[in-house]
Length: 363
Image 1 (cartoon, helix red, strand yellow):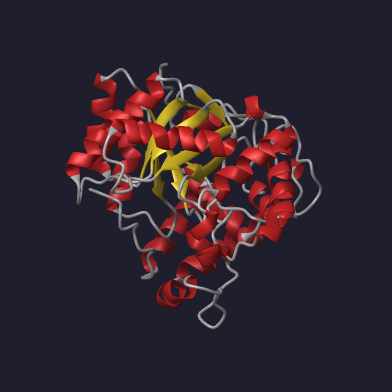
Image 2 (cartoon, helix red, strand yellow):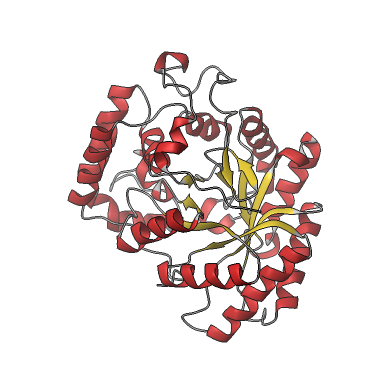
């Protein structure tokens, strides 16, 4: 299973030349999008995936995202629309879902896949939590089997370590790595990946897995115009040199890069505390995003997601409504110019507000 590496230039060279007239200037009409774009895929290890995936953290999370089971029919329509427009990568985790709803995201994905009867075409990337009681490779393999049972699938596309324990339980870390090897060798997953791994640990696990004959397919990290510090850039460079696909989660900074919120208009729930701290320092960046969006006849989120794609990453914005799917799909089929990329990166540097890093991300 050789891992394919594509530089950002090669990544885009396979696409037909951009023609904004081929794609509606409004992100909300009409669907389906032209077959020119969403159906073209990129390689990620042994898998072929859409250049953008969707995250399902909100599917079951009541605390942060206000999930209610009455939303399930809307989530089904959200999933169907994404698939009908070429998206085949969906990210989840065995820890997604609060309280009694733990694992709800996986259950819903499995249900939607069965109802759509498209199992062979969908790549599920699920993450296995490094809970303190998962101390042996066998326990990690059992976690994978439990995810398969919840989704009622025979095989998972990418089995990912949700976070590294190197900072607080280094002995557990090796057991988890061996668990990845075991689930790969047993055919429970087609490929393996990691999440929230810093540059040093990323190289270590890559080398360890390679010695065991297991290619590291992907590395998932918080990556956006709000989260592009030295570690993130180093991780991106390591992924490029080792043939690992970088998956960028929170490409919209939990919603701060949508343009919907201001210091006086905050989201409900715990996010409001974070937004209150960061949003006042984002004016230069949000102004640049707005300016480019207006010029391009795009929306602010579409520009922010497109920036992630231009960095050679696969963004996985979270979705829970049809409107969000329609808007996010408008990030595909075109690319920012080099001048626009520089403008956004300069504006990001001028903005003192920065996203806090995941506490589990290692060095």
